[in-house]
Length: 429
Image 1 (cartoon, rainbow, N blue to C red):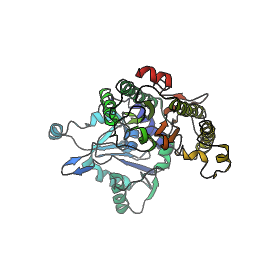
Image 2: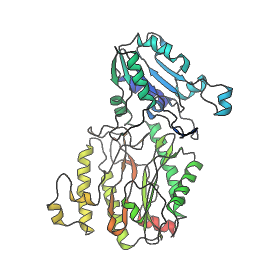
Image 3: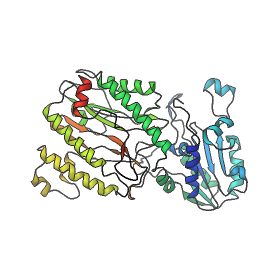
Image 4: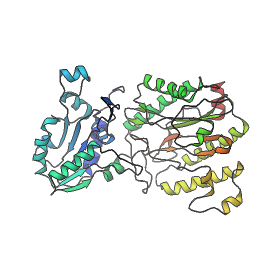
């Protein structure tokens, strides 16, 4: 892995939290992701399933984690099953985890090779009543490919139909949403790498640079600084492209007079950062661009102050809508009459600001968290308001990542990344 080793105590704490919420006489099973094929013998780069990583730190394919706190045998209380490594694998694919290295990574003492899994599974299934299975229940999930986890669950339930099956997701949604200090440090590292990329990009942007050249500058700086890569598919959108919310082609020329919207974040040790900044191709904002930019920045700063324990996500978005409505009236994009006549289910401001303001962030860019429950200290949220005016070829979104505190305002993990008009123009001069 490119990232530096993570203290295994993080994963020990995470397992302790999960186990504390399990029912008595239950076990839980977590699988790694597949390596996905492209065609012929080509595959996509491996990306670990975040849940097994969260609970063990294991970052390789063909891995299984089993938690069985009430196991009669001490060695079965927590187990890792790994693909057995050998000299041939080391030569062709690189070294895999040994049993000793797996303990150093995870803090799990009972490490077996995968060939022993079925035998051990049969034994422990005769000793338990309930099995926690790990299904994808994220509110944005749209999965068409059958995952390794899904195949395993189907096979398990066929072989052992008489057990009671429970869901790991309600537990994970809660415990993963509140970050440990070590996790905050890893997200902060990802944000710091993103800052390096942004500062480099400001030094190369000029009329007629292409969006993909900007993307290339980011990935160079990210990899150079030990990032896993992009936390998500980057958006580098100039001019009208910035009004397309999920524009990812990044293949156009950046023209003098346009604004470039860059929604880009580095991932470090599988933890995400999520930044959006908008800069003028010429190095200088026009008065209109400046006015729209500052309006979005005011909304972002005011919205961030609402990220405190007890805030309800849905209510928060209503309040942000009120802030945005005021700014859009000031910009001449809405009138008081527009607001008076608006459809309550689709407020007038949605014409120019049609997406949400915040989402959980962590191991996944759109991380786990139950949006109907109050915000808590230790949660990490983005704040990303925007104004999109297609008729002016102008889209502005500004985004930072915040950690909710027990008392006071949240901490901005991207506080060092230039954000004001004056900062950006000075660095581009």
